[in-house]
Every structure is written in structure tokens, then in C-alpha cells.
Amino acid sequence: VEFSQRVQAQAEAKREKVSPATIFALFKSDYLDRADDAAADAFRLDGRAIAETTSPKAACAFTASLVRGGRERHLACAGAAPAAALIAALNADAGFDVFVSHESAEAAPEPDGGFVAYVELTAGVASSPAFGVARGSSPLVATLSATVRALNRLRDLAPAALGDSAVARAS
Image 1: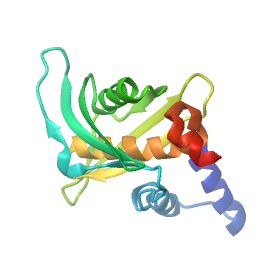
Image 2 (image 1 turned 120 degrees about the vertical axis):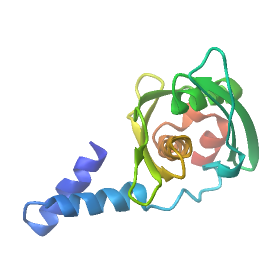
Image 3 (image 1 turned 135 degrees about the vertical axis):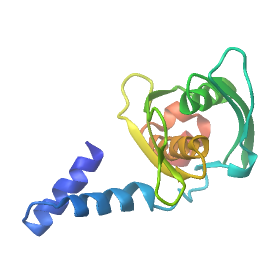
Image 4 (image 1 turned 90 degrees about the vertical axis):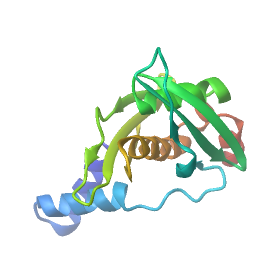
């Protein structure tokens, strides 16, 4: 819905059908090329601190470091897929109420050798979904980066689900 509104606005502004090339350019500028959130309470992923680990009970296991509002969280993550593992660890550590609605089954390779991933998050039962798309040097890094971008969008849609720092920002 979010992106389709952007495409519709473009069509109305130009008063013509939007070409596939224009749709891709809009998608690229809205999701892939946008700068990471610079707000003081934005989530930030330390890409250098991601390390794959092993878990006898999970298909995906890794450690990651997230920073928000000056507080760093070192998370041990394990689960069926990267975004779900990160969100489960973050929910357990911070008491958040966030769920993975969808994550790309596998990050798609790019021609330049990187990867692109897509993640959709929701908070509680009534929030609108928040989307994140990101590039990364590996499927894991791309998926975790997309998850962090979705968290930052969700922060604006459902701040109460993301704890007192987000609520304090709104006041």
C-alpha cells in the first residue's frame, strides 16, 4: 500500500502511465538508496559485529549488535530465518511487541556481487506493516539491514511497541 501510493502520486503528477523503469527508480530511491535513519533513537546495526554461529535447534544462528539511543545490545540470535531470529532476540531482551510478517526466503544476488533482502514487520495486533529493503555483502547482512530499516519505520508507526525510548521521542 505504502509504495503503491507513491506510484499513484507519480502517475497523477505526470498525468500518464508510469513506466516499469520509473517504478524501479522510485523503488530504488524509496528503499534501496535511501540513507539510514539518522534520528537519535533510530536502530543501527553494527555490520562488523555480525558473526554466524551454530545452534543444534535452529536453522539460522548468529550474534549481532544493535545500537539505539546510545544503548548497545549484543544479541545471540537463533531461529528459522535471520529476521525472525533477530526480532525474537530483541523482543526477549527489550520486551518489544514486534513480529515478522514476511521476510524474503533468500536474499537475492545483485549483479555487483551483493545481495538484496526484504522484510515486513508488524507490532502487536493492530499496527500497519512496516517494510524494510536493504543491500548487504551477504544474505545475512542484507536481511538484518532490511530488518533494522523496517524497525525504524515501525518506530514511527507504532512507537509504544518499541519501548520507552520511542514513546519518549514522541513527547
